[in-house]
Image 1 (spheres, rainbow, N blue to C red):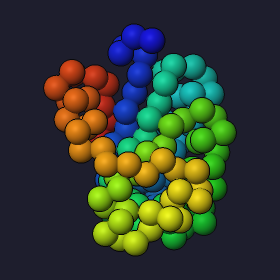
Image 2: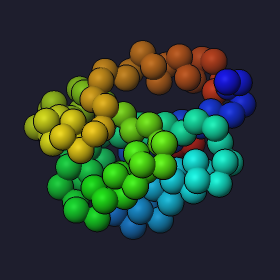
Image 3: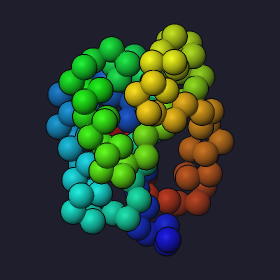
Image 4: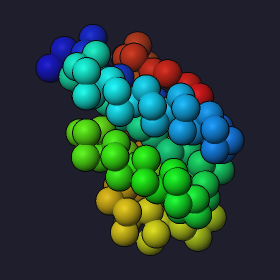
Length: 114
């Protein structure tokens, strides 16, 4: 798959409305309507706590996963916020992603930061 058809969404804004009405809405619809062949949402910082503790956001993550969106949480953040286990139970990949983010940036891949 070409890099032009892959989108990464770096989700750092822990506002529930922004999370639902931008991150999840766009990520899910991007896969359902074929706007992007591959979509990855990167959970970083306070969004890890929001995702682990907000039932509405948990449902949206479930919908995203069912639509084929890859959802990955920063392990450093989620460990520090004590939510790694909960995120993994939800089907979210939990991994150290600092190097991955650096590669995405250096390779000029498609990155949307929210």
